[in-house]
Length: 182
View (cartoon, rainbow, N blue to C red):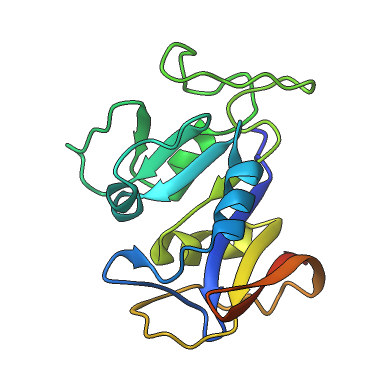
């Protein structure tokens, strides 16, 4: 099986705070635009609670939801029951378990299955924790704030190379959008 490139993408605060009561801590328009541009026409993998907080499949993306609930279904999404199953489903290999009619595989000059060009892990905290060691790159919007959180992004100390994609200020909060690699 070809393993797709794995990218984690999140908006966090300086304490790695990610969310509170199943909601994002920040809704920064520049971060949301970056997220949409980065993940469009790719596969996104998320936990069930992240999906429920969004409330629908993200458009122009193949949506894979991970849950232990064997009865969970979500129209327009593929439901998997482990990280490994989700990554296998997103694999660019021709033996992908998808049947083509379930979700559109977006065109790519390199060919392959759903994961061509990589897959984006979009949350929540448990899914990030389970995939951080498998990740090729991180895309983090880091907000210079310490807002209360009950969900946290895992430590990313292994990612040493950092590129600043952009920075700005939103409602008095400074932020940077970073690309990190090992």
